[in-house]
Image 1 (spheres, rainbow, N blue to C red):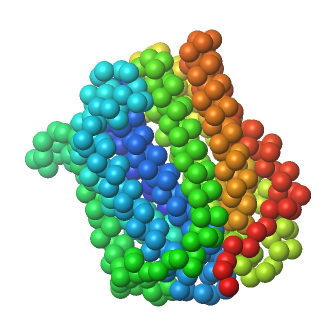
Image 2: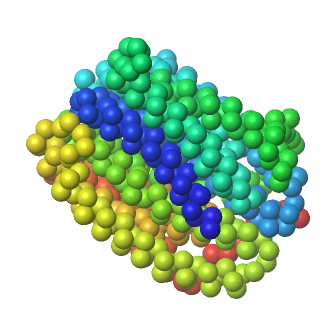
Length: 436
């Protein structure tokens, strides 16, 4: 049951990005690519947020299994402090030097210009995202997943309306195009934070967290936070950096490759929504079960979940392949870009099939059980060997076509699947993380 509201929340989050892409993509390839690459700093930032929240969920899910509230409030307070400070630092970077942020990922001047316009506005939103994201993700550990879907749902509706109004200039507003998309996103993020604080004080009845708990003493929990949260954070950072390295490699293969990759990233996110909901929900359930001391039940459930993930992966991959013929029709692009989109979608289907396993095993079962060091080690190795090493070699030295480079860059999910599934089946991954 947890998978459904988590998947709904992910659908809403991805929906914001997809509507930006489709609306701006109807204007020009360059503006669409500008948004996609301008969002890379935000992507890395949200990856860090997810790592922080996921690391704390490893602990708080097990504390919730024991119904111990004080540790949950203390850990959440610390994570919120870190999230807000991280948001401030990222905002500072993209607002002071947006051109530098863009040039990390692409060398196309026109795309850099559009991305810079976007960053100068949306850069103010990261502190709000830091607070809202950590709090709502942390609520999942108590099984409270519907509130985030509601808050993000309201924000999504506002964002779509503001996008339509500001991008195209309706209701007497000026036609702002890419800057309109940035303004709509900023306003929506502010609304999310206001709604979150309102929920915290008026409706939340499980852990009773208030803003004063931001400065709760956490020394007692530091050893376990470092032991379990830092590996999760490093794992997420490695994954996020890997995706950004992939974007940077493709960002130097020409405009058509950039546009095709930007568009396909949206397709992947949309297609992978149910996979993420399923995997993250599994992690929370595992944490709760282990916290209750039901290790045998956890082992049995993990084997069933692997079978379900195989079916989900096959369905999602088949849907992506079926989408190929009509995929380019939703944006204004050249014939060269259209062909590249259709060919790259084979790589996206290949990635998503194996991602069904890795989200379940790494972001769900292994992480929820506290087996975080193994996940981090695997993420680091695949980042440096596949994304950095092999990716740069095939693009810069061998100079292979963009579609082939993209396919190779997607192969890390297959490697992770081969190495994590046997670990689940052997049952040597359960760790107790709580402090008595």
